[in-house]
Amino acid sequence: MTRNGTYRFRPYIGRLISRGLDRYPRLVESPTIRDKVTLRILYEYLAEIYHDQLERRTLHLQIRGVSEAFATGSFDHFVRRDVENYYPTINQDKLLDTVKRRITQPEVLNLIRSSIQNPCDILKRDGYKFRKTGIPQGLSISGILANAYLDPVDEVMETCDGVQYFRYVDDILILGNTRTLPPAVAAFETVIKERKVSLGTKKDKVGTRGDELQYLGYQFESGRITVRQTSVDRLCDSIANLITGFHKRARMTRKRSGDPEARLNFRLNLRITGGIFDKIRYGWMFFFSRITDEQLLHRLDAIVKRLCNRHGIDVRAVKSFVRTYYTIRRNLKPPGYIPDFDTYTFAQMREVLRWYGKDTISQEDVPRIFRHIVYRETSILERDMAGMS
Image (tube, rainbow, N blue to C red; front, side, top):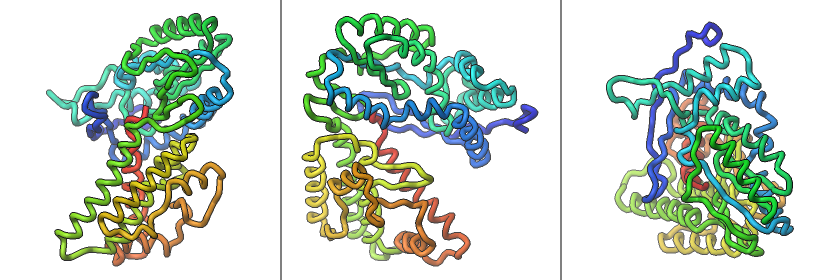
């Protein structure tokens, strides 16, 4: 069906994710199981075509580059810009024109067009209507397409002399001096306008190297790289809700399924260390592994310990932000400290299922149910990371 152009996506399932009291919620769309398989195949094809872009624009490469620039003092001034309401305002025709520079097969282009025009159930009014502007957020291909849309911007900025240019999706940072920055910013604004998207004003900032800069959830200060306070608060709230929620359920529920204490430890430690699933690193510490503010990590460990003591949880089973940080930074691999779910044995899967009260399922179903549990828990980690930019 994909080859002859007759494949039809079913309407996506939408859900709204809060981005704070002062911002509109983000609409995240999920495909059906059948469409998810199709989009995954399409993602793998696009990832191969755009492998150079994906390698160059990873979040950690951007953060590492900015961190090194601050550490070496290789700039005097910075300009931070972002695209307002980016995904919903992407011009579909311009996007497809950009994609055609690398992909010429009509069946692939038709599939991409169908996937981005497909309607969402939450937007249904008088029947389903295909979207004419923007691309859905939440699809496996969304990130690649959103990055590809600003390829022409990258090409222009890479020709600007005397500046360092960083971009992660729609968050842009330009470093330079009073001589090189003005022409670079002018060139940037011109090509952005040609892409038919608008620059926001809320995150805009112009400053000197000694000024505080917040970028991608990080906070760069003179001599220190730390985490933006709202990002810290979001993590603390998530951990507090997990612990207090367990305490309330323990008082109210007489009959318990599985091993609630072991399940709490598993979920709490996953908040602290993160984990690896399908070769992807999930979690707060993986995201913020470039910080230099070790005092913050000691404060987080103290907060967790205080919450555990207050609610009668054995802190000896709880892992540490500080140890996780050094495990990641030094590329250490203490057995099991940061869980790699891709390497779990059948016995380890069984043990996790026992914690969740699913120890009676058949042997054939163990890997499937285990993947479902891990997928759900890593999705929670992703929600904790929402709004980092």
